Length: 196
Image 1 (spheres, rainbow, N blue to C red):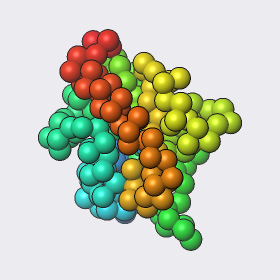
Image 2 (tube, helix red, strand yellow; image 1 turned 120 degrees about the vertical axis):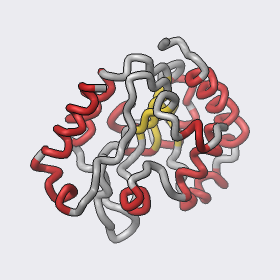
Image 3 (cartoon, helix red, strand yellow; image 1 turned 90 degrees about the horizontal axis):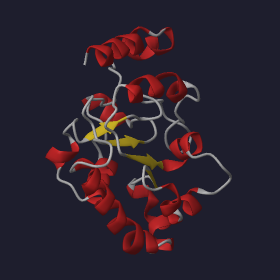
Image 4 (spheres, helix red, strand yellow; image 1 turned 60 degrees about the vertical axis):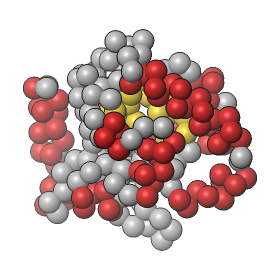
């Protein structure tokens, strides 16, 4: 844990994060050397940032349901690591939240992931994370529908925000085809996947 602690200190001390430190915000992520499943999403929402608990909102409750785990398992850092594309709430935009800072993940994710050698499955949630980690010209819907193309080590997902109810209504295959496979792969990963 010493190197992970050192990285956290570096994040807090980084001048680009001084505004967050001044506001009393801690970097919001979860990293443990024994973590098995990595969740990469967008920046934390305001409720999560204020509480200091990642995914501490309606989106988080839906994500836990999608994963087929209970709250205690989701909060177990040896089961799930959580690395948003930015570790601080970016503020409000005219519609929704501002996007995560473009260079944040490329600066900090590689160092943190290097210290978590047992990750066997990475959930890539939402368009910002998918563009960074999966690239290509496919739409979010195409990436999620073609999730098998990323297996066995990555699994693309739509963001679990309640505001995405229209997307889910238009894409019923997500519930019937994707979620059962997601739960199976998550169970395999946190139960002792190939990365151990």
